[in-house]
Image (cartoon, rainbow over all chains, first blue to last red; front, side, top):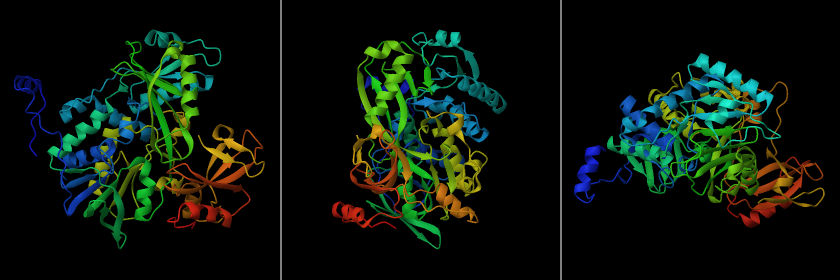
Length: 417
Length: 107
């Protein structure tokens, strides 16, 4: 469908006629009988996959199928942090591609995703972390990712509210990525959805996949709560429910689904204009544009599909952050929520072909998928269009588990993403 | 908050007293096994949305490993049993069937 561009002129025009001319950002069509590509999952990764299939590869006969509502899974439940300071080369390439795409994503989509490269610090609070992060800085320099090691005094300058000489875990320095930051998570999904809809793709919400039809080891189509739909290719981009979809297609994934929680405080005046991650004590915090302190911590350790986490993890995270930021101790918690994250053994994602021909999976982003959305969509579109991974996705195949060729970020990046 | 009864010491333990240990009843692959078998043993997981058998350790109690049957979609616990059990016991299977008649059974 043809869309009017969002612009200052459009705002002025609508101001003159009581905002009666705004169109719906995307259509809500009934599914057709057949599509060239079906993407399951209308979160950030699924919509970005569809968008770059259309933009980079000219494939536009696409349906994006969503069980719930668009962007209502982990895309709407994360802490919106964007960074690319990874140790391993394949990860740095993929996450830096994503971060670089975020830089002008608002212009590209004609939708304000509010990318804010406000700077991101990963605190080093033990000697081991100091050595680890200095190594990461060297690795990033070789990879072309701009990060630097900064000392405790510089940390205090950047984050005046921090307590750098705590008794147990004093701040010894930090890994600093000046162009890391945050973006408006919902807007990323909405912007991609609008752009996909403008290219003539169908975004079908409230439509759950109930089965995957295959014949002779090749995908034929899917069964959904809105009827059967045939497809040439199928991309499964469903995060926490990846194992459920893989089961329908007849294979298993090296994935465990677990609950990860986040919370926000009541809104307060601006007090911290960077993102701070403290991996040793396990908490991370930034301040949203509304003034809420956005706080995230660790996952629960057991399989869980309920989108509810265990209370003691919230308590642990808050306890750790109060040591690091004493001034937040009197803040009230405003909201708390959970999402289901898909954890792999090496804490790196899977972008891969599968045992079934023309089924592709994009999953395993675990606790750190939001930052990767544009790069993930870019690499996944390449994989789906050509049927084999391009340079960005090559190392992230399922075969790495059989071959023992891990991209081990669980050790390199600590636990928090 | 999850509460499991330790089958050894009989204590009703809540989850801060316990350590999760992943999927239960994995068949260990020995020397001479193929790459596929090792991959399946080490990495491929059922990760079901529903009835799940898993390992837990009563780490701040008796310290022993035990097994639990639990629903990952509701967090309902069907029962716990000792770790020296190669497959789910008939008691556990009956307890699950009573609450989940549509469950397809342990494969």
